[in-house]
Length: 451
Ligand code: BGC
Image (cartoon, rainbow, N blue to C red; front, side, top):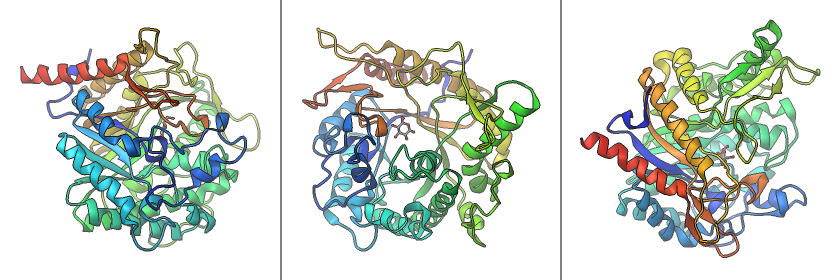
């Protein structure tokens, strides 16, 4: 049995966060409005009416948070840069005070011996760009590349690698198709141009980053898709879902073409958004690394209605997270081995850029937070990752989601994903049992190789 200690000597350990989920300080230092400020203010949009106005107040407490990271013994920290802090309206000159925050953050991380791994877009689009069409507008891709260049001009001397986008699939589906996330559009399949324009933005930004000497990654939400049965209808439905969730966001990057979405009645030009030369541009800059965000597998059966060519089926007989998501650690091995089989030598080295679970944890009377389900989740997934590596998949690092309990989008503060508990009244941070476990796991891995 593969074991997490066997992960190779240079394996990198990290944690991930995202700007809107932790920073707060939404009106400080010239920051512009983001789509999440506007969406979160809509009655009923977010559980309990929670907003990211204060969140974890990381903007003011980043020194304390870096000290927590240092205590874990991390190699790297994946965070995101808030576009509306850098360009308050998504265009034009830089808001220096906003960029200064990330400049200090990068310096402080380096001083703590932690490599910064910034994501340039984790869903907080400047509201002014949304008013011009958001990711449905082709121009947003060009604006994104301009912003990427501005950030790299300032931080590129200290940041070796960049993640362009976080989970373009989830942003398209939740933000533009179903309206569960900002900007709250309910376009169903008419949301597909938002997929293409994000990928085009990635391609254009990749060129800008590379010109400035940076390496380029993207973080995709990926899931192994299991048919509900081996019958033809379920198998075809699973293939259709796989094309939408996984291949739509990997085939163009790695193979230079979109998958067949005929089962959805969608033409290859994705609602007229794909123009000549776009696919070449998206695939032109080979990825230096692929970020994989993995939470659970998906079970898919034949459609029950005319709207979509699939239905989601329950995965039975497994534990569930507080969110209700099935806990299937081997799904991570299945996903990674499946990616290698599908893409072969076109698959770049992988970093797990998110993996974790929500737990209903709270401080006990003695002040400790015992989150055993999270420890079980992480341990199981790290062993599954080691199994994939033993089967030959090139995985370079693991960044758990997340350092802190934070603003879990439409769920507000109700779902806790942190290694560190945050009291959202006092903003007090309390490391949980999983924090000590992760610290000890990292130390044991190092000790194993130090021999
Ligand atoms: C996102 C995170 C989110 C996490 C848990 C991922 O889809 O990138 O922002 O908090 O999942 O839902």
